[in-house]
Length: 380
Image (cartoon, rainbow, N blue to C red):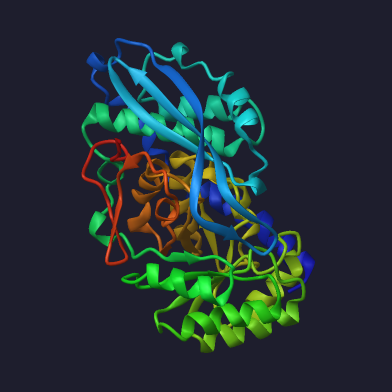
């Protein structure tokens, strides 16, 4: 695949996407709201929070034991919606940047919380980037509106909650002893996600250690850690033999041509994670990746993630719904999209030790959506 063809695909996909993306459901929702709901003003509050991980979380390029977060609340006529921004280092956000952005958000100017399309587009336009901070408002607003309707978002979108998939459980890079401990903790899960990309020896040791304990299907996430396309293809062939189902972001996201070369030859689907952030990135995916990884902290929240799902399905791209290390607030928000995706990686709340919400459950490895309204969470 040469550069000119990829350039053509990017252009043609943009035009096609604009034509096939359905009209936003939020526009219809806003027009159907009873006037009784339009009697107050929304108030946004927020506070920094530090997520504490159960184990050291090691990727191909770094390790950490905490994740900075910001918790948001939107109050309207006594009803409160909850939101969250989880900010791992690679997003480039922090407590300081998120609180500065959220300080610029004034929801009191809107008298109808059901106008999510307008409100969230306005918030997105306040400043560039800040996707997790924007997501914290988006999630809280969705939670509020769902509570006002007394419906959860899986129902509002018209999805079948029984089709929610099993979620992976993440095994980060570590010593064989710790990896075996993590595999024991993952008992009952039907599929495991394995972090790779540190070195050839480490990659194979990770897989072999897990395979010495279980034969459940695996997924591989090198986090851009593979630098040579021939090695990446060699690993794809080897991982296929080890019952791995797909590979996330095998090489640095800037290596478009090398990734397209791997995708064309790989026996496993290649998914874009770091390379895929916002809806506008969709035009670059076809012909380079087999699918995309959607995360609310990248997409600015549920509104844009919903559009991503619809467009990806129309374009024939596979979809993995992922997460950061998050509380059950953001995990539950994402779970309402899960019936529409091919794979889910919604274990973020299971990896932390200070969750302050209760929402989506994982039973026998399967995502079980909360029946509660909005995003379906309760604050503990």
